[in-house]
Amino acid sequence: MSNTTPSEDINQDDLASEWEKAMAEQASATASQTHDSIFESFDPAPPAEEVHPDFSFIKDIPVQLSVELGRARLPIKDILKLGQGSVVELSAQAGEPMDVLINGMLIAQGEIVSVNGNYGVRLTDIITPAERLNRLNRPFNRR
Image 1 (tube, rainbow, N blue to C red):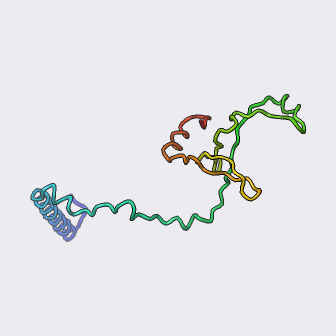
Image 2: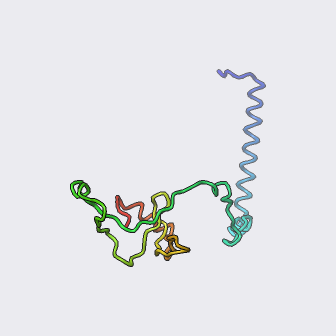
Image 3: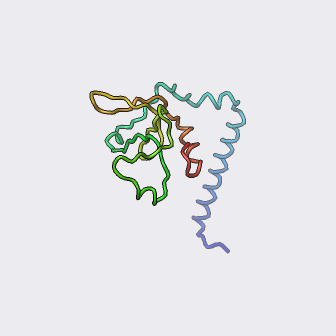
């Protein structure tokens, strides 16, 4: 025994027949289409030079840019011995490119230059996004 009224049964029957008709129409339309006509309905992707993402909403966000000359790992006893005039040997060789980091992430390498009495860095190699992702997969190692 059903909990629906006769008018609800009729509406459900009408709805079911409408769905059957729609499904049959869709099946016949799909069967009559060729693969070429299916793909013709899609617009091709715009050429890469026409795509201009809008980054204006993030342009004012400050980030920390730093240039790293090299690194050193010292035991605390050696750090306690440091004083004015002490020399700490770094991992980088003289003349080797410096690492340019944004918020601690390596994005480029460059060389130190002097501009109007101030130090600067001339970028010599930009790290590609693929290389950055690859470096992220290496645990505790940037190089």
